[in-house]
Length: 120
Image 1 (cartoon, rainbow, N blue to C red):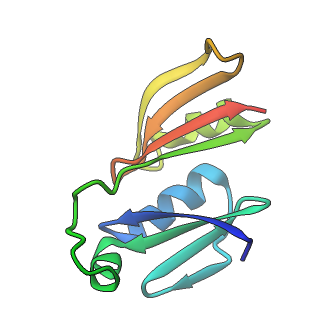
Image 2: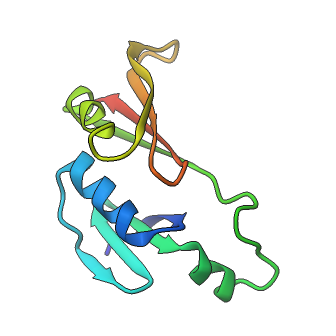
Image 3: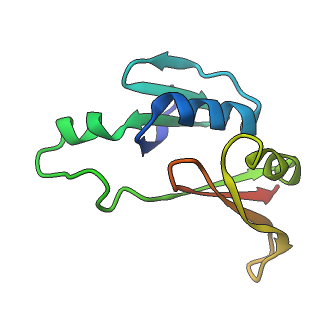
């Protein structure tokens, strides 16, 4: 586990785990009921069932505001974007030069989170 962790709330932990394992080519460092984690090299990506966070945080309701963008800078970003569809996600925008000086492609994971893959 790293000092920084990004947690995505997911409806289906197994589906989310399979998607990120396929796209990133990684094996989870933790995979137990209620949490799957991947080592992203300095940051941990956690996948937590939305039911778990709703139980932990009083007043939080599933599906309201739990959206985020996972922005990953990788030398192999284009190759990873090619894996999105076969892994169960949806490519939204092909790799392209962006106004802020990076080449980035955008996708949705099976849970509807935005996955931005930027060439490092």
